[in-house]
Amino acid sequence: MTVEIREYVEQYPGQTPLPLRAELAAAIQDLKRSRGAVILAHNYQLPEIQDLADYLGDSLELSRKAAATEANMIVFCGVHFMAQTAKILSPQRLVLLPDPAAGCPMADMINPSQLAAFRAKYPGRPVVAYVNTTAEVKADSDICCTSANSVRVVESLPDDEVLFIPDRYLAEWTQKQTGKRIIGYPGFCPTHIPLTLEMIQEARAEHPQAVVMCHPECRPEVSEAADVVASTSGMLRAARERPDKEFVIATEWGLACRMAKDDPAKRFYVFPDAVCPNMKRITLPKLLASLQDTIGEIEIPPEVLEQARGAVERMLAVV
Ligand code: SF4
Image (cartoon, protein in one colour):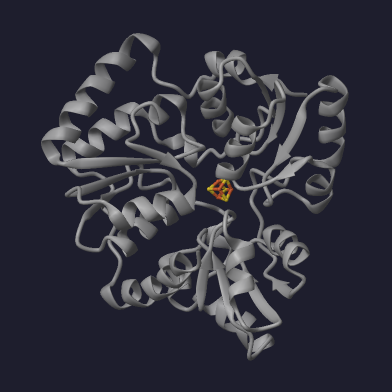
């Protein structure tokens, strides 16, 4: 069952009570200026956080912003691996994750010893690591990718066979686009795999005029049934550019908040259970406390950071 995002978000219980929002937002803006901070936020964040972001985007866009910023401090509203990536690209800056417990279960599905065992099983192939990995795993990988550039990254490699970690479904989808053999690690995103083909079919029956868009972390049968399979930035672009008026958004529902704000004349239907509880841990009171008391500093051992930076920078060099 889908719900229209504007109607759904009004009742979502995880947000800051309305009377407090303006006051907290003003305090955050003041502190941000006085501390010389920049706020980067992922497209899956709560609308109250999206509204305060200096830059809102997907992992690739935010990595580029983190690399280019001249701010003293980066406050990253997202999950742990994203804040780590910002630190990897801006090691001289203070990087804060307002809730240090905002992790990513997919990123935790592979650690360096599991990666070593995976490499040993398939020797001689390069390892492409989705950015949804820890800094330690990135450090042991050859190149990173995001869902926005996985096809370009894999095509940039001279090898016909590559190892891809940790998301099996992004690996499978990327293989179909590139024609290369991709050996995927059996990880997955717990927010995307509950979306089933039946749910997509029901949504089409409910909204026959709607364009169905999904993220490549979805199951293959869901991707095959969708009209558009893309990263969050790709879906956002498609929603802006297409003349259609209705869209079913099969990914974390935070993205649809941004789409609805961008284009109030269009209607966006989401699956309310497609929520990433970790992304939703970042709230206005936590963002304020983080800026005030320097909560959630990201620290990475220098040798890990240096090695991980190689894999991230090789990704950024792929156009
Ligand atoms: S949506 Fe999935 S992959 Fe993204 S942070 Fe949440 S659990 Fe991780």
